[in-house]
Length: 240
Image (tube, rainbow, N blue to C red):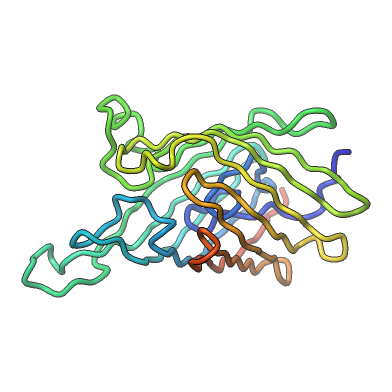
């Protein structure tokens, strides 16, 4: 049975488009929705290329996003990068640079009673096609995906299932290429709360998020069931 949508779809904190923790979904935000927030990423959820002096590191960042229509989402995200100051090995190491990227998601098929929603998208799209033709990517999050989502009503409780395929351009992220997906659950007594489990291509992640006072979004999770990831953001919808 198709669920009557009564809550706002929630975002992947590290990129700003609608999704789970590190897995995109075919859900899209309501037209006119703006989001802005900050996030923390442990070194197990970041791409393998994100290293400093040969070691991966924890990081964070921020994003802004907009859904001008209910079938399209755009976001701009920055992840802090660790370098020697001024790229001089004699200088101290710190978060002196950012990975800036644009993401786009399109939902050509809306969910129906008997079929799922379908969405396609790309992260770091401003350089995507150039790097694809070169058969490598110099940026950390460059990927494209297709995903399907279906919602079910079980006596007032909502169960969502998501399944997709994602391709990272950079060979250093080849372990995350392939099938991704997950499930999410919302209780009938508080539909703005969501608990979830996902497969991001490398790890099983679990977590929960909640929309408080209609605008404040809080997400917390565990990568591989062990390592904290999370964020805070502000959501606001302008009704045209």
